Length: 324
Image (cartoon, rainbow, N blue to C red; front, top):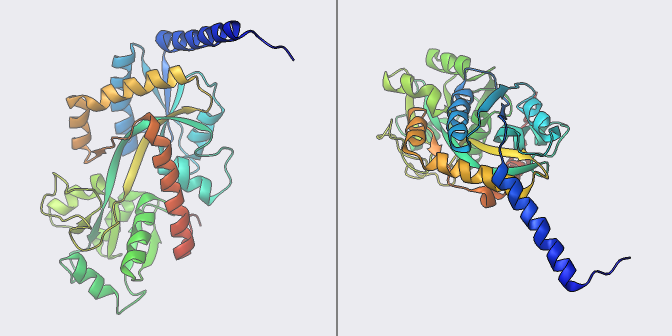
């Protein structure tokens, strides 16, 4: 075992810190790939491409979106977890990639430990809607209608373990009511059947159902955001409607592989915060009915981990299944 003089050891530490800082200052020197674990054309893809463009402008290098869908977002997440930890391969993460799918099935990565979280991006709230034929105009009236007839009415989701599925199960648990879950392969067919009255209710992402609410093909009873939607200012939040603790939606984050140099992660985090602060990016989020999430690098991991713990507890309390 070698014993270094204190002055020499201090000098070595300073040198190491200087090298790490230089890594951050020089980064990036080539294009960055941002993996989106969903298919092209959907809400996640629209958000991802907007983010990539603006991140590239701030960093001075192109940020290229690489769509790798499949496995409940686990295909793209696993790819990034195994990528070189140099900051040039990033994941636009979601609850599905980081918490839902790892809890539901065996995946080749840990949704929290195998990533360095750069920061949170945005949340797309869920909104409780019903077919116009349902004899309820408020949240309280809907709960009163459903409670005495458990299992008679049904609700649509975008699939097992999807955000709308989890959100509605949260609602059922909080309101102590029972409806039959009808999972669909995506939000579009779920909305179609809700409009047709094949299923009576749903808690889909607000961006999907806004047009149907505005033209009267669906009734909105409660909004899952922290405050009312600018697009639907007359729809109360769940808290305003009498049910607290129901803030729910699909969140998005930016993450790098674990062990990415801290200076590189910090450089990415600073760039992300600049993008989030820009009026243009905020306007783009408004168009998608998305809420900006303020959590920065130091808070993002805790945000994702807490979301995972809440989901574990919900599964334990309700017995819900996250996959078929």
